[in-house]
Image (cartoon, rainbow over all chains, first blue to last red; front, top):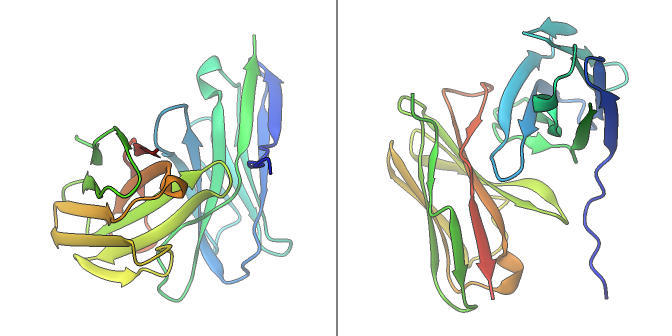
Length: 113
Length: 113
């Protein structure tokens, strides 16, 4: 039969606009979260992280929001640029000494000129 | 600073052959992770090491897969014998300690014919 791959959600925004990428996680024990950016042919690139004792963290042009009540994470990118086009992944680490990342499915961000 | 270095970047081989993927983590990092990325399953953790000791290999798909870390600056992931379903991009990542950003190499794109 025909194989079906993951169908990535796509977010298309105009250059200069703000982007918001959302991620739902399922493990209530997760206490560390990371956003990664992956460009074609490259490995995931670290953008920003947040621990479960925080609900907001800001970096350069990026902000991560964490809502533990509904297990939701978002990445806001201000004034998007063509170089922001990529697939964005959220990843989590559960507590209790497990160090491996569990990745979400990813969102494909497309910047329109 | 040099990032995580993986070799080879691409590998094409026939099924049944032994495949060895190599990784040099970032100097000073004491945790090393192997991930696999496919269209069907996304990014998945295979195994990780802390201070050269394998901690969690529950993600290794079968006994055909094995990983070693003989010293702090080198790790291998071996598949023997290889099968077409092993075709994927294999990433190595390293971090300094638990619950810290993991930095990824650019991966090895493996094709088993």
